[in-house]
Length: 74
Image (cartoon, rainbow, N blue to C red; front, side):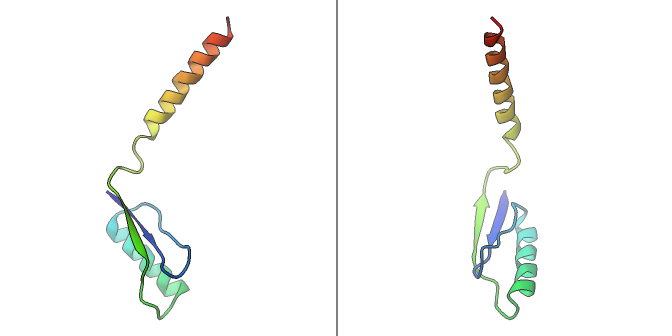
């Protein structure tokens, strides 16, 4: 699972990371950008692997391009 933390004061959001990394990054953001304000906002949860599945999509596109290239050579 991956988490993305959103700031409640501005448009800042963390990348998809572990829950503890996201919380740490949000705290760092609040300390630098909004001192004296307790961290707020919301957290998105991605139950899928955010880095997975990309290879399958790329492979499908490559196969499709090869089919198109083969059809154009006739």
